Picture: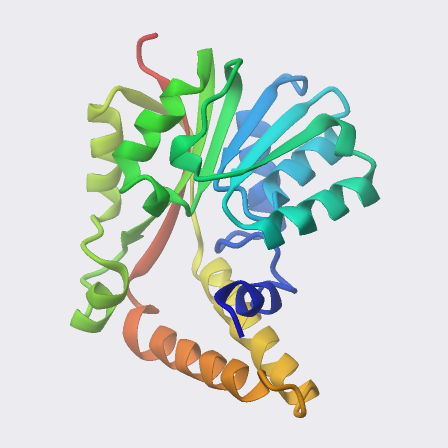
Length: 245
């Protein structure tokens, strides 16, 4: 099975591919979209779940998403058509770092996709290129909530702690106007949902050629989470404005 296929199955019950519950997603969108008629860009949108939720609840909103995955964007287009928001959504299949917009956006989103730009600050630099004056950025990034194990560092790299992460953003010229640190319940719910969905699919499709791989992936990922990074991994979302435009 391809990585995309595994990801699609794993996130079947948790379409927001980050450790956030629905209420947290709604609050972040409310803070990022105070007017309801903004232009929104999601860099690394995947299946465009953030954009779909914003469009469904805000009939004056217009959105664009960028992602390299044809499979994810096809799913996003189908979902947009079902929701009746497809005329207000434009999707681009390309590297997010290479995307060039013709008009600025009032909100730029990048949740859990900073790897596509080489880190948090490069992602903010890219977002700034697309941002209208007075606009906002909604960004999601990992951090170490506690001292990580060597195994956790090997999986996620050299993350900073929460305070250092926020300090770096402020020093880069941004001001947080809202933030959310994922709770233990959100973090655990995300992991159980992903690896539970994948394992359940494998058990429900024993004759599928990918069943054994899916079950092994689920078991390995669950073990890495429980034994490797559950006690140290954190996830932060920030709504930011430029300190000075």
